Length: 287
Length: 287
Image 1 (cartoon, each protein chain N blue to C red):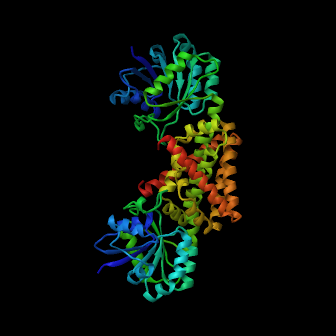
Image 2: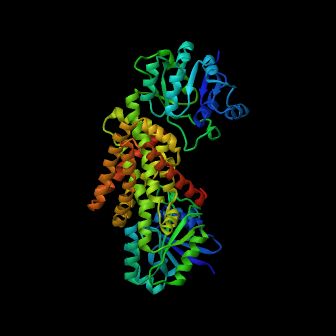
Image 3: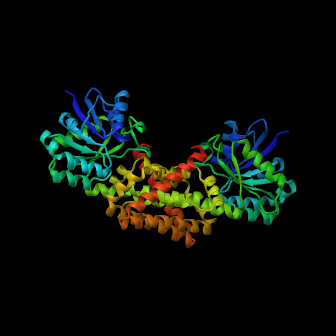
């Protein structure tokens, strides 16, 4: 018998998940506020069925996957908790911050396991979907301290079916980790783009635009992501983000001091250590 | 009659230039310290002829293009200045810093025009060449204050023949510009890679490696470039680099303060301005 997956929020990541689920094993329901999204999803074979309400989806789904911005995930857990409990539906999500979502789920007493697939692009909306985006991606699975073994197993099986590499972690460790590996890179990248491109003098601005090449383009790519989404992520992970920015700033200040003090041996050593670690990481990822 | 281009230093950028020059217009000579490079270049059709000495190349070339690290460019200008003057060869280079090279060339009184094609990858060596890499790339042309119009014209024609978009600029403006658009991005990227991957605790290190995805990969790509090359570039452009780091740090500190002060409206506005400028820049580059 097929497991029914109910995708709440059919944006870039929700649509990509629906499009990647193996048909033989899963039935794919979806619900989104905008009806056009449903029309698009059915026309493109992304969903088997589009529900007209979230209630309808929760009554049919074995697993509900909330693919929405962090504050909306929390809002929906609170709004639909009664029905989620009645239906004993397993609820998971794809939010980039896990502590605040887990807290809401535990307070409501629903069957919950957090997920966070490390995949995405700087684009959003269902049309930007990338079937196969979860292939070889790390998927953090964050079981709450009151573990529901069946729920964890089913959620992991779903992510494995789309090619995810499961990595179990608790919510506090997760949130500090992604502050380092994802949230701070977005901030740094945005600050860099602004310091180069936000130039009032039109002649200098023209030079700056001409002087930015492929290295710059890649370094600042993630800063073209959704400002609203990143506001939501960072405001829900403030303490960890500040801790991670501070540790980044220490490394950056060290390099600046070395340059100021003509310690170019030291600079070359630091830069070389970075290169070595990047190569080690790429080998492990097979990238 | 074909113009003879003499490429001194057949590494990634020198070999890419040789491979991109239109055969009908240019004869391609090369010289490199390692003889194997010549064997490789002739075998792969990258050069028409490999000279056994730099003297031999300078006697035959109309334009000599020094494709070597910044300090070696300066060294070679000083070492071969007498012959360069005797032969009235037009000398150019591909160094990422222009002030120090121009100064050396002017002191020697050779026919010199600085070039800086904004192209490259994090890889080095002739085997890493990318024919066509200069297509649509900005090429800064830096004529010294005692301008040699014929030399400027010939050097520009050469870069145009491989698809470069010419942008004339003086050396001081160039060096401050690339400090912003290229040198600081390399430092920031390296500091970020180190703050995430240089982790002594093996369990945390494993988590960090798992938690880095495609966004991180792109943000830190340039930090896998040659440490020796970046030491040379940054040590020859120290003042401009410090000025550009300071202006980057201001933007980064502003964002951090906004997060600390719960000014997430401000954060979203800053991030949004960065996104808008990136999109404007991409439209202009047609990227």
